Length: 396
Ligand code: GLY
Image: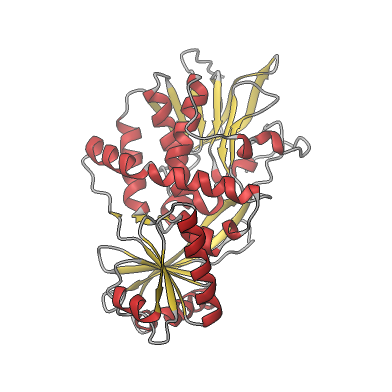
């Protein structure tokens, strides 16, 4: 066992959240070790994501559509998270010299039946009442905005502030920034096999390296940012309830459709990229960590997209993949200090919003570490709400 005493902060997980947390902690003057079990950073959920920065679409369509304190807190957090994007993209591009496609042309959620169109009109009014940019457009107006929409489009919800980012380019730049930062030491092919504590404080972690050697890193701060794999970090004092939720996606040649907005439909979204691809997503499957892709699911996604944008059903499929979202039992992320172990902090469980929430999560963790003002009230996301029993340590 090698003991090191020069380490202050350890971040477990090298996806986008982990990279940005490491970067934010380093910017606050901490020495940081970033631990990733894969040979490369960010090659799991972060690069699989479509990169939608679309809290308003989620609010109109999905989980955030509920009216509950929980949903309101999540929407406020996601809206605040969206505001961090222009600054993040600028600073990463400046630091690394890499291009990141960040599209600010907005999102159009569409309906091909009158009931759904009515729901979108109601959502538009609710967003406007909350001072958010949103406009209901009728079918004709929607087709003027996106001529490739189906002729039977009944209406649309235009969300000019819901943007999207190329997650692969973003993760590439974040990884480069981490690699180039002399304040961050990267440990790849490594997994945490124990969290070490003394007198209620974290003191470090036990690591297993690729060849099986067990090592030790001292730290006064350990941040768990391992996404869907967070539950498998051995030695955590509580059950997080983070569960893998698979999302299959397909990229098609979207040049004929010529979409400019991200287009959302019931259970499907179509995200245009500058290179002419349209990313169509995504399934929501409880299938463990399996990332296989199946024809039925991909055909279902293409058919769902073609319901709204028929040209997408007649074009070439280019690639298909699956990512694993970190779901939680209440669908809220888990961000904040462990109530029982000082120095142990969680930044995980972002479920459908990992890309969107990565920068604000990093800022929040750095503020916690530095004792400065938080960018957002973390109470709804506190790990203190997780009262599950201590889990058995296991490798994962
Ligand atoms: N954020 C979209 C998804 O998780 O599929």
